[in-house]
Image (cartoon, rainbow, N blue to C red; front, top):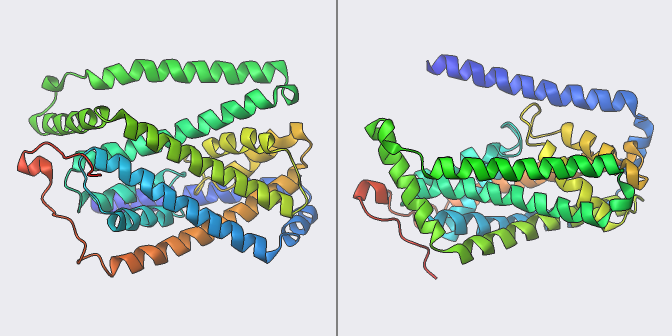
Length: 335
């Protein structure tokens, strides 16, 4: 069974890498490669380093947001522990499917040290949901700010997708919350009870959830602003509302697990979305590749940070006995 799972994992990784390579090859086939290369060469090294610094600083805010959510469920992680788990997950996005693959590594590490396993799982899930909500809100603002650049048919499509997503969430949420636990095994029933307990703990502190949403909006808006600075340094100067419209939607496309970390899909989607604003696809793809280089460098530095934080892991370790095992209600984060 283990060998079979490893084989399937390697096959999936090969397919995703192949998907990214194929997407990039198609882009380079239909776009003038010389223009892509020229645009990349116009990016000054100091701008690249400054954007990389801003990218890592935004992820430090991401650590605060993720820690807030898991601690609402009773995980009781210190900032150092949360940072090590978070940055380990950030590095893992280079090898796992889509941009959410790092969440599994992040949660897996936190499960070994958090006081509430249910709090870790629920908090990680809600943290990612808040990221999606933040991207959706930013994209909605962008759509409202650039109505003249979109055709009536395109605006109608976005409205339909938004309404359909809201209805789907409105249907799924009550089903998940009121799912009859008596119809599953005792072991699964205990897990459902722990998850509901963590959810109740989170529900009792809505102000923290709102604060986490504000942090998610800040992080995603920071990424959009940094992307705009990269574009401006290469000569592509678009109004910020254009990036506010295109970047969140392109990032949501990268969630589809058919490429490695969304590489190739994100660049293609961004090029298509920015065409109505006068951006040449070759230039947009070049800027997307420059951003990919920043993401990769940031992931490598995140691995270094996680390693250095691990040197102090023993001294700052949390109790390994979870609140579920002790039969206690997960505690809320202390202020």
